[in-house]
Length: 199
Image 1 (tube, one colour):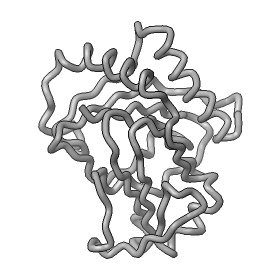
Image 2 (image 1 turned 180 degrees about the horizontal axis):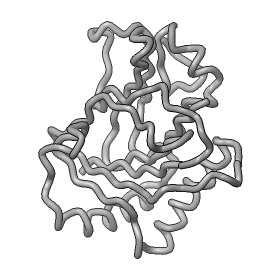
Image 3 (image 1 turned 180 degrees about the vertical axis):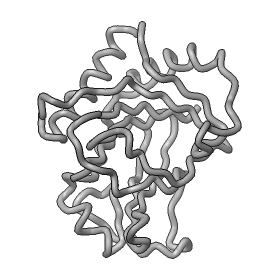
Image 4 (image 1 turned 90 degrees about the vertical axis):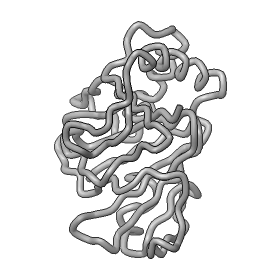
């Protein structure tokens, strides 16, 4: 099971210039992207994207955000709900393929609730502790082994998108429709936390 637990921070204005272009298990120079290291070893970017990545304020990845025990508990609790659901061939907007999802993650253990609260606190801190921000419900996405996410803009989420990658490692590729030479790859190990903040 490859699960992505995302907590989206709504409100606060801003627009999302970046789009999620691919979620894969590896990245290579064969696709034409000249990726360079950034201040964060889990974030790589083309020269055109380096100013947007900056010092890690806008694109951030932290490894080992949850422990192995926390990951196992979150996955077990999510699996109990997801296993009753079939994998969908395609999302209503045809962005996600071969997936199952839950919107909202209620009636969970106090330990899992503490992990989600820690993620919310980290996201608030990274996004400026603005009291006007409100969080949308937790979104759990389970991609089947052949599942994938096509390029799309998450414009409805507000200024921040944050999540925890569980169950497997992956690469989240961000591109800009207005600047095709600007590419950022987030290398997401299992149990890592990521946060994307839009100016």
